[in-house]
Length: 195
Image (cartoon, rainbow, N blue to C red):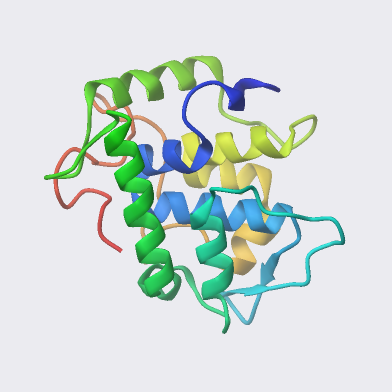
């Protein structure tokens, strides 16, 4: 799988296209966790940590910066999604996806090009069976493409402790349904775009 993350849109955009804003925030949280910047907090929350020396954030990934900056107090996913900095960063990410021709603005829906990109990435990147041999970029792309199924396989302890799985009790599957590339019901206004 190495190197596959360099082709096409980045993991945050892929997650947004596949599963909406919540999926993109999950990828940002996992990216921060893999860099040592966030850890599980009190039950089913996320809190900041002191990153290892030399750890830096990739310029331009404002969603990662917004998530980390919004964790001034430990927060669960629902609360994190409601924080103003995260909402602004998500709006920026949606705007970038729309400018790239991957997302219609109103109603927010994937374009044909986005569906093709997701289909091609899924064909090139199989569902993960474990974290062995995967780079950070590979882990993030797998989480972006396969959602909770990948979280459970790749970062199970963090996923459970931080409360990343599901959406208010309903598990996000991340696997395609018949007729839908994303498997998330992401074909209308309500599907996947609410916090």
